[in-house]
Image (tube, rainbow, N blue to C red):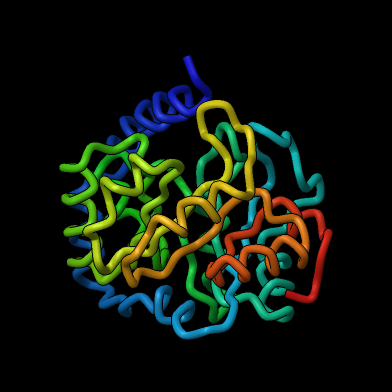
Length: 251
């Protein structure tokens, strides 16, 4: 069984617990009373010569613990001060040591829009994302059917959330290319093997002719990597591990 399948299975089990604590109906009622604002996530990335989505995560299956002294609030302030356009916050608990509490705390101290980085497999998580303050959700094509992607996008639109569809190969890119409003993320890390290839973004960018915002994810370790991707018509970057380790600034 792959690590990705393990994560999905664990996510499904955790959802049973969360639904018992707070039902979908209760979340919907709470949202009706909050009148939360429309997302500005996509807006913050558009029409820029370059934009960084700076990621906040304590650990990952590939790298282990990245930040021993993990302070998501301080990291968010640091990212905003150094010019990030948006934030990505891991909320998956078992493999990335994330938490929805991290997102909620960061939301209180930053003006930057936030992507909830998690493994969305149930509509419950989309409503939950809106409730905790996320501006954008992640839809990973390799774990979702075409029907699920369509359904989840419709819910996101209803909740005025932006949505980033993540793909890894040409077949997945073809499956989702017709979603005009989507942010398209190319994961340079194969979620089945966790191997990284920066040129994966370059190859898929050349195949993609639509007008969607195109985002390179994973394996971006330096300004040189960003410049290389920009030469290949990619100007939005989701960067996690190297920023968490403080390997390059200013953004």
